[in-house]
Image (cartoon, rainbow, N blue to C red; front, side, top):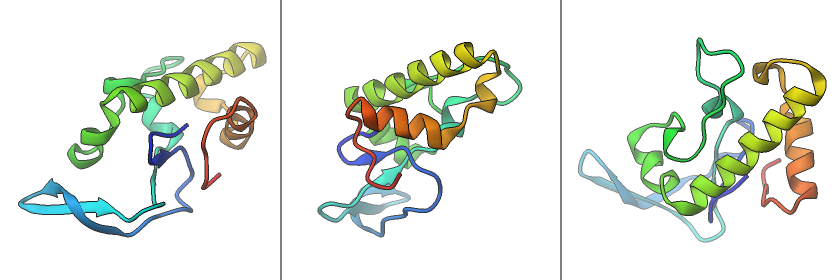
Length: 117
C-alpha cells in the first residue's frame, strides 16, 4: 500500500528527510524516489478486535498525517484494510493475526507499490 511516495512496510526501509513538511517550525521533504512506510499496526486500533481503520482514521503523528489524509493515502490504506479483512475472514482469525508478509505479497500481486516490502 503506498501513497506517492509512501509504502506499507515493516520498520526496515527508512528514508532520510530533507526539508519540507513542517514540524515545530522546521520543514522536511523526502528526496526524489524516497518514501516512508505505513505499518500494518496503524490500521489495527488497540483494544478493538476485528476492527480495521483506513484513510483519515489511521493512527499517525501530525507530520505523517499531513500526507496520509489525502486521497492517495485513503485509497492505499483502504486497499490494505480490505485485503486484510478478507484474509482474516478466510482464515477465521482476528485482523491482529494477519500475516503482514502475506498481505504485502497479495497487495503486490494486485499491483500495489511496495518498494520496501
